[in-house]
Structures are given as C-alpha cells and as structure tokens.
Length: 495
Ligand code: NAD
Image (tube, rainbow, N blue to C red; front, side, top):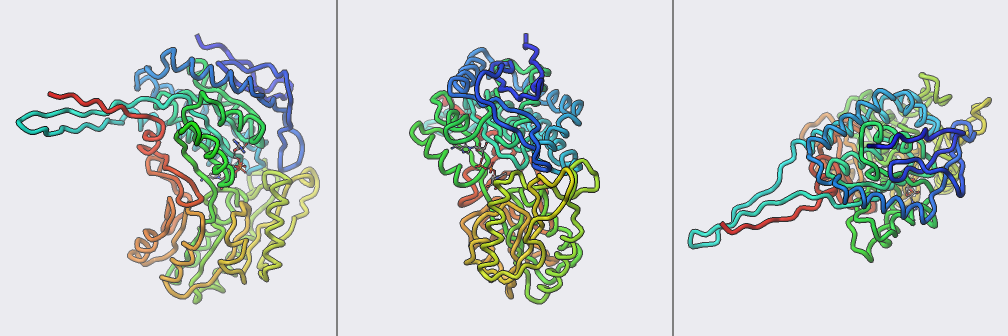
C-alpha cells in the first residue's frame, strides 16, 4: 500500500519527501522567494546529512523490494498515469512554478508544465518500444555463440537540477530514470523547491512504490547537494547546472568511479546570413536571446550577423526588445519576468559594467527598470543588446545567463563558423539562412550538442541532447537516456 502523503504546503513549509512520506521539519528552514516581488512564498526544510542518508537508504530498499523487476509495461503505465495526474493538477503546478521563478504564467503553462507531461509520456513510449542488442558470433567449425544484452537499472540515481526550468528539467531526468527501473533522490534548486515537492504527491497518488522517488531540499556545498553526491549509496549522478558546479561534482564522484551525465552552461551563437528573410530571423532571434529572461541554457548570447544586414538586424532587434512586456507574471500579456534572484541580478549587472568598460555600445537596456508597486522588490533587469564587442571580451566569452547579447559582424561563411566555434562552451547554435545547402553545411560544422537551422528551442525528445566542451558530458533523450539510466549485462551463450 502506498502511504497517503500529507500536503507539502501546510503552514507554507515545503517538506522533504523520504520513503513515501513528507518528513516533519525538525531542523533548519530557508526561504523560498518570489523573484517578481521579493516576497517569501514558503519556508523550506533543509535536509541534513542523516536525512539525505535516509533518502538514499529508502531508495536502495525500494530497489531491493522489487521496483527494478516491475514489468516494463507497468512502469510505462505508471509514467502515463503520472502525466495524466499532472494534467489534472495542471494549474497547481503552474501556480507553484510561477511563484518560485517569477516567469510569465503563459510560459509556465505552455512550456514548463506542458513539457513535464510530455516528458513522462515520451519516456513511457521510449521504454515500451526499446529493444536490446544481440549478436551472433561465428566461432569457426560451425560453432556459434549468441550474445544478448540484458538491460538493468543503474541503481540509485542522484538527480540535481537548477532553477531556470525547474519541473521541465527535473522530469526530463526522472521520467527516463524511473522508466529504466531506477530509484531517485532528487535535489531541486534551493531557489525553486516547489514543483519537485508537488511531483512527490503526484507520484505517490499514481502508485509509485515508496522510496522510488525522494526529494531532499537544500543548497550545494555543505548542504543537501554535497551530502547527496558524496553519499556512497549513490550509483550515478545526473546533473544540470553550471559548468563550475559540474566540474566540482565530477571530482566528488571520481573516487567512487560513478557515471555522470552533465548538462551544463552555454554561450550559444546565432549566425545570421544576409539571404534570410529579415522578419523571420528577427522573430527567432528575439526569442532566442530573451526567452525566460535569457535564463535558458540554450539562449543565444552571441549574435554573428553578415555585415550587409548588420544595421537592419540591430535596429530590428532593438525595436522588438522594446515590445517585450515586463510585468506581473500573472498577467497574460507579460512576456518577460525577472531574474531568479537579487544575487543573480548582481552577477548580470556586473557583466553590464564589464561590457561598457570594454567599449560596448549599448543599443538598448543596460539598467534596472522601474516597475513600481508590488514588483519594486523584484529582481528585474532590462533586456540588453550590445555592439562593439569582440570574441576576446569577457561578456562574449563567459555565460551571463540573462537577457543580454552581443551583436558582432562577419563577412564570410568561414569566418562565421570560426567565430561561432571560438568558445570553451558547446551547447547549441542557430543558423539563419534561406540557402538550404549552406544551412546544413554550417549547422554540421558547429561544435555543439544541438545545431538549429531557421529555428530555436525546437526539441525532439527522442533525439540526443547534451553539450560539448564546458557544456557537458554525455547525451540524454530517447535511446541516449536509456543508455545512461541502464547498465546492460551482456550474456554470451555458446550454442
Ligand atoms: P548551479 O550549478 O549553481 O546549481 C545547480 C544545482 O546544483 C542546484 O540544485 C544547486 O543547489 C546544486 N549544487 C550547487 N553546488 C553543488 C555542490 N557542490 N554539490 C552538489 N550540488 C550542488 O546552477 P544554477 O545557477 O542553478 O543554474 C544555472 C546554470 O545551469 C547555468 O549555467 C545554465 O546554463 C545551466 N543549465 C544547463 C542546462 C543544460 O541542459 N545544459 C539546462 C539548464 C540550465
């Protein structure tokens, strides 16, 4: 029998979820802040070392009690029920995500929560359709051996996620992990703890056995994140976050040789050729630079424009940036929310200063907007565009993770490719051209995990996703996720 979990939000305290139950808070609490207003929306119980240990132990127990041996069709059915239940509780998830992130309600509905549902349905389909490799080995003299791989779960997977697309990125990992028969201990970002907590309720409601999904709240170093990644009972770590934290986590798990999947930072380029329809390019670029207030790992922060249309693109982007509507996330006409926190705003503003010191011309933005009223305590920032920077300047080399991009001219295709690839990161690129052959040619030369032509953020969840260089290790999505979340045993039978 699955225990009925208590509500995660009585007295507005978000609880840890361990072994199928919300844990009564008996330790430190930290504040969950709405970045649109600066108000506290909840207190969160920070998991200490023993509680993280209990979460890992309960996950191990769930595996031992047979979760991993559940028939694939049952696991797939459970994922589908989870998707249906999120759909039924859709607005609760939307409200929780908006309060935690300040993102416009339309985006939470159309992207974040909608994609969480799709994540569960997609991985239900993927696991249901998955086959296993087999090979016949010719041994000579008519003898043969049959090799076949048996898919097994990796075990207890630590899932550590950031704050920018909290539920979307969490379910992108939890769905395939559960599909493959693993148990998970999830550490949501300290900035956005709510939807991972709600998901605990949903998964219990649809009959996920206790201990298979656990949530521990807290920070990174010296807190739940570190307690989890250093725990000897963890079999694999899947992490989305900054490259610096990824590098740290990698060192942490190296001693015990655990597999890692890292989806890290980006410094993504758009390359705009002069054969493109201007309006189409401007629509795409505006989204790719400013979506989610620039807080998507895939956002464009470097825009390389063929010199012949440079002024037109610059003017068009400035005009479109002026049309973005910053405002209350609850207002359906709002297009742009705040940054996640005051601390993050300090970081983004620092890059504004560095850009100006480097001689950037600020085409638009560069400051803090006055929104007044309830929103005056929020971490708002102006959408910002620069010219006059080059690939050697820090704002063009380092990830800003805000609504800011540098526009840089180029003359030839080779130069554009060289400029776009001149980065330590390698997550995504977008090529804008009406020349079919050039589109393929340039897209394939990009040293990135995903290279778009005439689109941005279009995702096929069965395709591999990940990054090169500082942007990550490994690929997830479709079969690639099954590879990470399962460990095959090859059985070799001489016939
Ligand atoms: P972050 O690295 O600061 O934190 C990510 C998560 O790691 C949080 O849950 C945090 O508490 C935890 N953490 C921090 N230190 C830790 C430690 N020492 N041990 C264990 N856990 C620790 O990143 P962030 O600021 O939350 O997110 C923004 C970053 O995420 C950006 O760099 C962005 O590009 C990246 N990101 C990448 C992708 C992708 O798919 N490649 C997607 C979204 C975001």
